[in-house]
Image 1 (cartoon, rainbow, N blue to C red):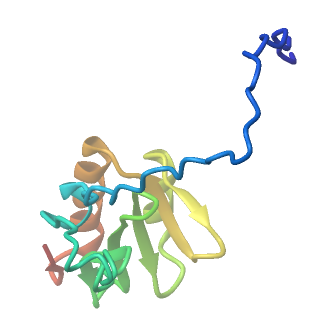
Image 2: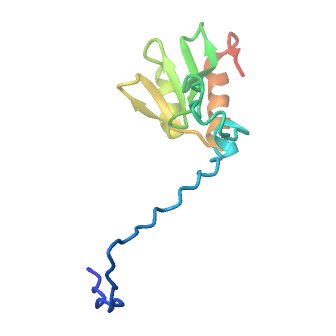
Image 3: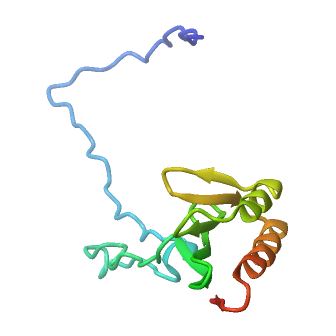
Length: 145
């Protein structure tokens, strides 16, 4: 909704003289800015470093996917996608029917584009996926962490 305009206030009469002086606004230097510590750690901008970029080097955040459990014998890998907060099972070949039934029963869904079975990563599903990975792997398994 538009705001109502206020009625104009009456200005004092201006005395006219031969020369009218206009005051220049005072320019004060701006205080140094602070970058919050949670961005790049303690990093105060001073006059000497004001010309330098505030973020001198880009961060190297690692890959969003991390393999946690692999089994060469059974041909699968269990990992976590940190970007989407999902636990992921990837199989090299179509898994056995009992493995598929266990994944479906426990709430995993198949992502055809990724060719993987995924579930939202919570403390309970992390524990569940670790147990399923050990169960599917049998003896030969390598646990990363």
